[in-house]
Length: 160
Image 1 (cartoon, rainbow, N blue to C red):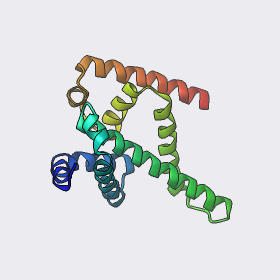
Image 2 (image 1 turned 120 degrees about the vertical axis):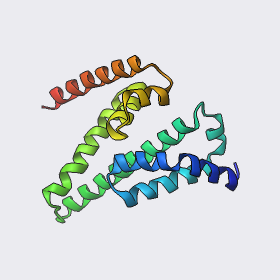
Image 3 (image 1 turned 180 degrees about the vertical axis):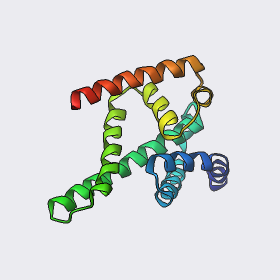
Image 4 (image 1 turned 135 degrees about the vertical axis):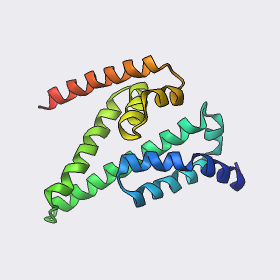
């Protein structure tokens, strides 16, 4: 894929990628950084992108993975700072910990549930939008959300 192809992808899918990154990271600047990285990866991985069933699904998957990696890396940095006496205010620790817990849950569930969870809870898409995006029925989205809630409740029961 050449630069013109990436520019076309950027114009077409950039706002959606940015919205997803913003929803996950809750920070405009970091979301923009991730968006740029996604399109750099698209340029570097043109073959993988071309082989993907859905360009949007591929871009969303890369966006999600980059965001979750950033959250995990930031958590590790905070943990190292805490170990060495540089304490953070509790309010700064709470939100990233919740994100790490979410990341752990997302890594334990199958890809169908994970995609629905990210679309619904992070991207704040409607069930109809999710169904269209994933190419499944609206009823399937509802069933997957119900299954996700069962799995999430089970993981909180085990943690507590």
